[in-house]
Image 1 (tube, rainbow, N blue to C red):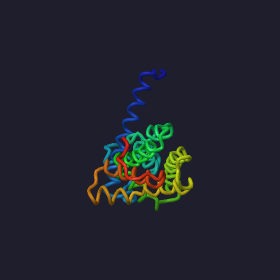
Image 2: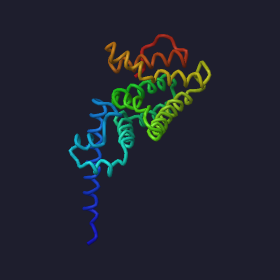
Image 3: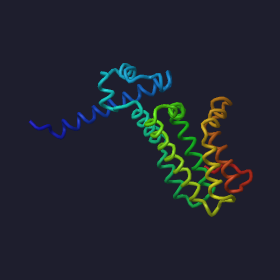
Length: 208
């Protein structure tokens, strides 16, 4: 007997729920043990599923890492922030959204961002996947800066490089985790740096 649409839908929902459980288990283990030391078997045990289920759902450990990246972007509403920045006509507000983009990513998934950096020393397929993810993030940032090109006080490539530099994980780590800044204080600081460096703005309260 052919499967009904309702039974197919149920199985699809169950498969999606299993993938989410496996990804969540992997994220916990990656944070606790590191990417390299975490095995697919350990992920299966942590998720409470059969070992073969992990391979069926993802195929390889790097695919779990890729899914965690997509979840991070969704949790941070990254796409919406980028689109809002590109649609904004006020350059000062655009740099505010540019700062929000970084702050939202770090707040939503600092552990995943650190994990990506640690996993960059893995095998070639993993490095290639991570490089593609980083290039996509950089491209989004470059688009935001390019959208205010006429307002820039320095050449576009230099302005884009400054924004990418401010996105460095080490800056967030030092200011927020080590020095006790709030995520909002970090966002305001990045916005002020962008306004100064890219737009030549003086001391001003952040535009929200």
